[in-house]
Image (cartoon, rainbow, N blue to C red; front, side, top):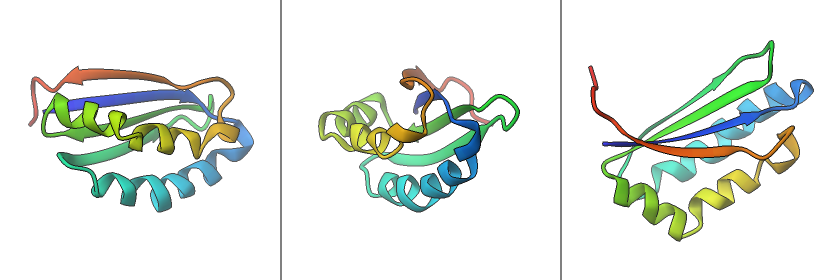
Length: 97
């Protein structure tokens, strides 16, 4: 399994909007992607820090949905919500309980 983490600083006044849009737009789009295993969004309302974690069957699935521009389209939906550009990282899932 492979995890893609996207971290971002969200504008404090727009956190609720951000969460709603994520639920209504990103989640359904993610579910259509090959290898999708799950998605999570974490937000610290005191700092505006946010972390999105998407899980994929394998690294190739996560890379494929970057190549088909799915990932870039999702990030672009939130461009006006960010204080600065989000950071993307990928990790092998080594332990799942």
